[in-house]
Amino acid sequence: MRIARPLLVLLHVVLETRALRYSNGYYYQTIENSKGNGEIYFNGVRLHVESPQMSVSAIQGSNVTLPCHYRYEPELSAPRRTRVKWFWQPATGEGREKDVMVALGSRHRSYGGFRGRVRLRRSVPGDASLVINPLQVDDTGRYRCEIIDGLEDESVTVELEFRGVVFPYYSPRGRYQLTYQEAKEACEQQGACLATFQQLFAAYEEGLDWCNAGWLADGTAQYPVSVPREACGGKELAPGVRSYGLRHKTLDQFDAFCFTSSIRGEVYFLEHPLKLNFTEAVEVCMQDGAHIAKVGELYAAWKFVGLDQCNAGWLADGSVRYPITRPRPNCGPPDPGVRSFGFLPHHLKYGVYCHKVR
Image (cartoon, rainbow, N blue to C red; front, side, top):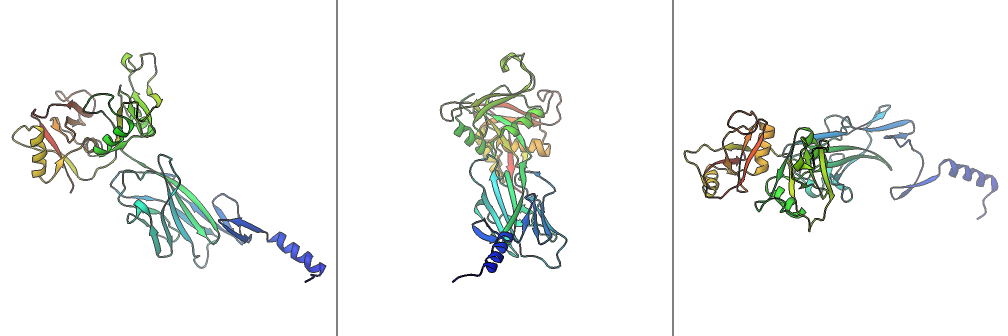
């Protein structure tokens, strides 16, 4: 069919002013405008997606709220049908974003390891904040809140990190006996995980001084030195975190730097009329409705609860330790910390630290 020239001109003008664009897998007409700065324009109405906190810190086992809010300018007389999606990028930076949850009105769905642990707060209109309860050891990373209105979407990111404590750990076989995978498993067995460089550096700034290199989560081997000395790289080097760089994960062996942020339950020194060997220590904790404490649990109790006990006791890995928050005579060095006697023969007699989940 032949179209008259005036009609062709009119059609050309319409197509130029309302050109087709391709986005999110669809072709659609440009009737909205976006400046790419967290604002979408709907015929003069702007959508803002914001978070008052770009970084949130929490403790493993607790709950946390990651803030995300959206609003329109000017305010709308009637609510729009918006979809909220949350995504997660692990702290290691490995892999693509993973779905956390999606919500449309009162309907919502959560995914993977977040299933049953997440919800939207929705305390006020426009509140799309994500509530995670309880926090698990591998929940840290970057979360992205995406608001979808029609064919447009805007998002904001929030970093989640754990408040915790870094502690050095070595094998019962001796120093520098752990491959990367063995170090990872050793930390997990003690209620912790391999520390990141950021966590180790924060511990160094708080005074951690340790002269043995340990694996970190990124596959590097590093150690923090607050007081330079010959045995720790030389006196001429400035204080800092020394690095051996990336190492071979199966051929190289080091100690480990573990990170724990868990305060679930109670760690306590079991008052008992007799000293105990290791086997007896395990049994008396069970008789008290608890289990013998892990190293990470003792460090967390020392760090977060202020556990202070000048009595050496068995732990689950067969080591003997005790926590001091108020240094005093006959309780070890003049600085707070968890004192360690190392791994001793199991027939020796000591006290015991138990952990009970309330």
